[in-house]
Structure formats: structure tokens, C-alpha cells
Length: 471
Image (tube, rainbow, N blue to C red; front, side, top):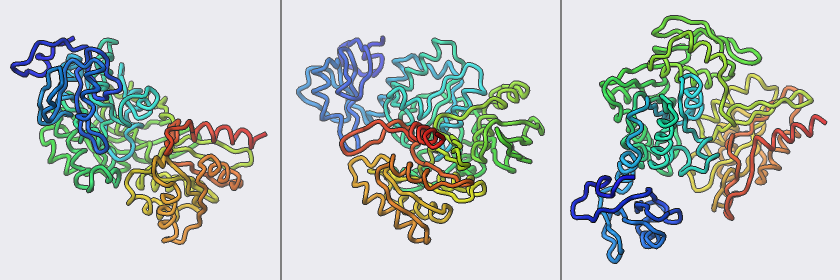
């Protein structure tokens, strides 16, 4: 483990041995270096004394903290310092891996999941993994967790690391110091404006990933994403665009059948017939993104074709259930306007009637609630508005804001705030040929209410209900 002075390069400080890095005072262990991170709700500086009581040997802070019996290192930005310290603490592991960052409004989890299957010896960090392992943050872990996983991948002999680089994670410097070989931009549409404030700031946060690319790295960008903005941000990288019928790497002659999609992939390696065992145009795009990265990093077509033919989707993405009377239920993570519109658009031609169950999270971008209501009201035949992680907000008020959007386009809706009852109601309404989309939570295993998190899974509930309907 490194000494404090080796991490901070600060002069005049005593030589202190550091056993670990911490940013949550409740999780400090003896020997940790504590970083006082300012936040929107809580300020880490207020918990520095508690961190020291728990055994922190020093504190990194943005302002003086008089009275602490341990060294205090003053830095302009504690988050940047945390990322730099994490890189040094774990021995800069991403320099020893071919590291890929994936950003975009939608598709990040699926692209990373696909990369884990297309690239040999590839470690992955996805939103699903973050929840399953209880890692920090929601999508991109805090720098110490990210660097720890990368270091473990090196120890295990992995060659690649692919992870989701969210706009918030990028803005909060969690990926500072990562050495990238490639980056992906999947899509760009409204989301997280409660954090970023404007679309321009949201885009700028995502472009930070491409500014970090060294000369000669590769940027794989969806033609629907802001290609020219990426080109301007990273003028010395290899740019590979992809898309449906357009781009340097494009999907042509798509033919969907039970079990997957046949298509012609045309790109730098020439036209190639292939089969993907997934359905949905968005999943074809996600496969193209992963294919573009893998090919650019040296994986040959014969190996890629074989691996493409066995791709699997991550949990909670476009999971389909057949009801005994001929209706279908689909569970998906679609949780913002673009994702909901694309998923409903995918399902509309397949459905006699299309029903959708969804809600909007509390303490988040209120502006997208009516927008998502409008989208659902325009495309679906029945909208069942329910709760989706309302947190401390009144779930009824959230539902009313969604309903305003449905009403604006003359859509048919009902409000059932109990999410389990809403899903049950929608499935009971379904008739042969109908499709019920349960959107917004996908892989998630809990519902976050004012009283805290309670166990809840759309996937488990739909599977249980479908089974009971079949009896």
C-alpha cells in the first residue's frame, strides 16, 4: 500500500501509511485516507471528524478543517483528487488493459454486455453489476471501486475492460486518470437535466470521455449521436460511425424471425451475412457498436461472426413472456423519453393492442414526465401510470404530471400507484394478440420509497403472474 506523500505529492506532511481510500464516513476503516466530497445534498467536509474517529489517517478537503488530529491535504477539487489517488493506489491498472468506455443516453448496458461476449478475456462493469454487487453510485462506480475492479482484472489475466461511463460519472471525475483505448457514443436525447441543467451541459459531460482518448484510439459513434461534436472533441482519434443503413459500419437487409435477426453487416471488412440471436432495431444498433469496437481492437471477422451468433441480452432488457391465451408481456429498462419511444415503436407493429405500464422517478428531471406521458399516449392504446422509485416525492403528484402528457394527446390512461397491482391489472386486460410493456425498472430488484428501499422486481413479478395465468 502506498504512503500518503506518494499519493498526494504534498510537501511538509508527515509520512502516513494508507490502507484504503474512503469517501463515505460511515464506511471508513482504520488506515483509510478520507476524501471530503461536496455534494448536492450532503457535504463530506461535515463528516470529516466522524471519519477520523473511525480511523482515517488523513483527510483530503477543499477547505481548511481546523482541529482535526490528522493531516489535512487541501486540493482545488476533491473529486479529481480522489480519482487521481485511486489510480495511483491501485497501480494505474487501466494502463495494463485495453479499456473501453461506453456513454450515451440509452444502450450503454447492452453494449458493454455485448463487448464482454465479443472480446476475449474482457471484464465488464454495467448498471446491472453495480446494483447486484452494491457498488457506489448507480451506473459508473466511484473511482476507487472502478480502479479496484480494473486491478483485479489485471490480476486475473484479463486483457480488456469495458464499462459504462455515464454523464454524471464523467462530470464528477470518476473516470479521471483512466487510460482508454476506445470509446462508444450510443445515442443522445434528453435525460438527467435535474443534474446537468441543460442539454448543452449534458452533451459536454459525455464529450469529456472523448477528450480523454489518446491519439490513435478509436471512437465508435452512432450516426444518430452528435458525430461532429465527437470529431471536434477528439480530432486525433480514429472515428468509426455505425447505424441502420448508414455509417462506416451499417446493418442492411434486416429480417427478423423467431429467435433473432438475420442481416447483412457492411463495413471496413466488406459485406458479411450474419445472424444475431436478439430482436429489436435498438439491439441491432448495440451489436454494431460492440462489433465496431472489437474489430477496431483486432478481433478477426471469423471469431466475431461466431460470437455474434451466440450473443445474449443483459437482464431486464427486452425480456419477453408469452401468456397462455396468446398475449405477450415485455419487461424493459426504458426509463427516459427516447428509450420509451423506441421500445413502444418496436412493439406497436407486433401488437393488436399495446398496453404500457410505467412511471417516472422522484427527485429527478420533472420535465420528462409529461413528455413521456405524451409519447405513451400517442403510441399505446392504454397507459397504466404507476410508481417508479418515487423516493421522498408524492407518487400521486408524479403520476399527475405524467397524466398531463397523456391527456394532451387524447390518450387513454388509468393511475394505479401500487406497481404490483398496476402490472397485474395490465396483464389481466390483455387479450390474444395484445402486448403489455412493463417499462422503467428492468433488472432492478427494489423500489425506493420515502421509507427506504423495499424488494421489488418487475421481472420476478411478471414471471410469477404469467405462470399463474397459465394454470
